View 1 (cartoon, rainbow, N blue to C red):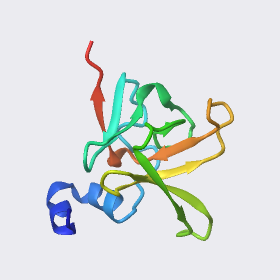
View 2: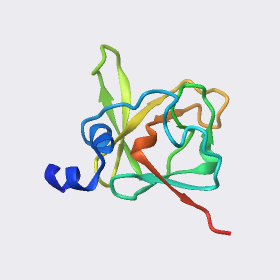
View 3: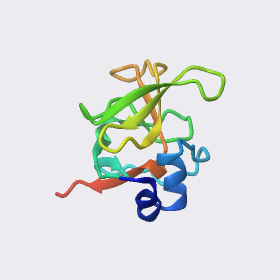
View 4: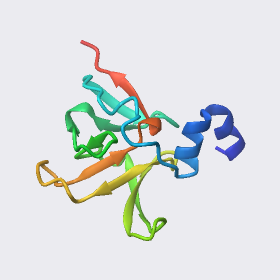
Length: 127
């Protein structure tokens, strides 16, 4: 999809984060405290990214997950703020989601996927 179509599809904040690699302010995202049972999807294309069972409270100010759905994301080296980080990108649309860190020893994977709420949608599990 070209950038004009993305601008029409997404809100200004979604476009800033998903397409321009922005970051939402910490502790402001709508999914930070979400405890619902379901799937987190890319706000840009609907690609299923994370299961609610992998979400945990890392205290970082953004929704955190310890694992992603297989094949749903890609990684890219990010040196944009004078430090080396690993960017997390939607494998379907290339949207910027956040970053992943190896600093969560309390999780099964040791990973902390630090993800912008604006980059996500939530599909509640039906009973």
